[in-house]
Length: 321
Image (cartoon, rainbow, N blue to C red):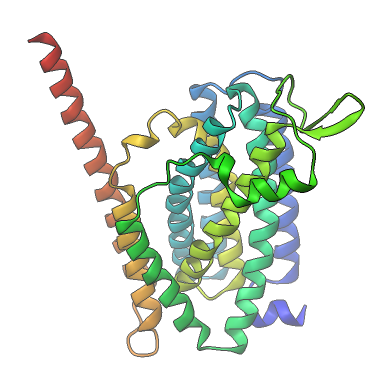
């Protein structure tokens, strides 16, 4: 309890209550949207995504009313940053499902357990990161440097289109765990000729968890550039991750059209990285950070939409000629 009071204004009961609430919401979500083995419809995914966003905003308003407007703005900014980084994560998830040929009706199950694992990992990293920041102020500069390097990487590195079957994580798993390429049900393991084997669903789950660990290298420093309160970092991250599965089914067909997402994210990460490096010389107010980040993401989204519509109209015009 002493550790919690050192890294956050939130009391222990709020940490416990929030964690229990997340668990309950996950169970409700699985019961409402995870029944059977049918493909999740776009309508259901939109409803689910809207519900998760509503939950996050309602909690944000309550938290701001209880612990102050500044922390409320930090919460909303952290949520927005993590949500935008999660959209970039969808590119990799699409690649994983496509490479391993995971049927659409089983993707929801894989993503559910993937999100659950991501929550556990993020909670651990955020609490450890907050404690380290409390002990060693200079880690802020390390985090700021990581974000600037990541921003440059986002600008110049295109999405990897290679087959994920060649990834090191998959090779390690297959070396120690017998596997099969057959998918006959939603099971992660099946018995073939008396041998228990991992199905492609389990292999996809492993890759998604490894991918989230890689993305955590970006998102954890990013959220600590927005806030140094451990609970704000934890809760905003978790609520953004909870909506990732629904967001996948909403954007799966159109995520490739978000052509300016990476430049937008590069600008966001560069801004918050610079903010972190300058924190001892010039403190940027939380509301300014929120306005800048929202403006960058809105510009990237609208630009992607506008260019896609122009190309679509051009294709239609060319076909009619």
